[in-house]
Length: 433
Ligand code: HEC
Image (spheres, rainbow, N blue to C red):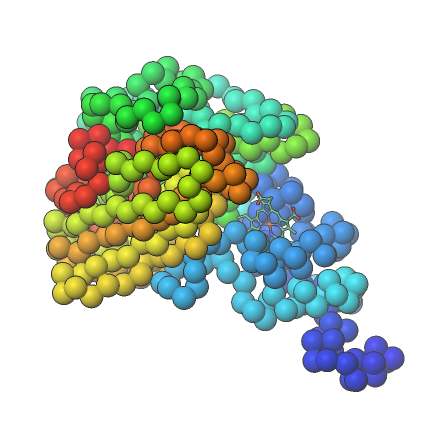
């Protein structure tokens, strides 16, 4: 009772602080927003399943949510409506802070919500599964460069997939993963031996991008806490894996700081029974012509492209490397009207998030996509591998990119070249990233 009396004479949030308990107020927020990554075997460094495991983190939780470092979400809330929006409401942020301020009280066990039954198997029922051929050992500590595994599909005819899922076997060491389709004839990752882990060699600073057909299409990925949003739920749209293609696993492993981890990531696909009504296509927008001078803290980049077809836009994924600072993606309609698709004011290389539209955006033919980004090549950027370098386009994290994958739904006979005319972003025509 003394608690309430004292609270009465203090500020409004002190009343809240005195009242908030783990069991009644905090646990439901953690279940909904955090446990997907913060439970044993997942990528979060702490488990928020129980009071005992969460309590030591109370202050860190407050700091992480007040600064909006957690949950990881980088889109400016002023723009767009995203199906996978992870931002906490202001009310939830206040509740978590008030709980930490009150000394992390447990409360009445009777108030506890029912534990979430976390799903541990496939979320889809795959017809075919491909996996990295050998288990890969991720060291306990240190930075691990993006590692690629080429796995031949063995598909002798064009194959349409209506659903897919990437499943790391050890989610504690897989920060994120992407699976790309490399069609026959592409020289992308040409020096990788099928099945072997491959880290592309460091190119000389400022070396031009390699010549020749470098085409690949991003097919689907794994980001912690996101399931099965890569495909059209009605299964009207499918992705094409051309005959003779390779699948390329792009693995972003992270050391967990404690022990080496072994991973053998898989990808599963549900195959279309007949010809699909529509094609789901991931189109790249990029500019490869930039040069970032040494020490430049705010170098601007721009890329744009134009749709030669009406499309339904379903997702976008801004992409830069370690010097990436911010990126805005605008749509510009043939009427001249412009709309922000997604704005990422604080780009973070560690979180390559895909932003799924709440509802598909219907874009008329002639709609432009414009990327505006900045890089920080100064020593103030703690991620910067070398502020003295002149930096150009390249696959590796010490090279740079201004790039976005845009997911669009189109008629089944439309391919990358027909969907999009690249008006600027020169090299993307002949040598696609
Ligand atoms: C998508 C996965 C994911 C979700 C969802 C998530 N976290 Fe995290 N969290 C991480 C990872 C991974 C780290 C380790 C640091 C990093 O990689 O950014 C982390 C680190 C933290 C830390 C430690 C920060 C420090 O001091 O080092 C706290 C506290 C935290 N998260 C709280 C939360 C809370 C609270 C929520 C929910 C409101 C949440 N996280 C949701 C993945 C997640």
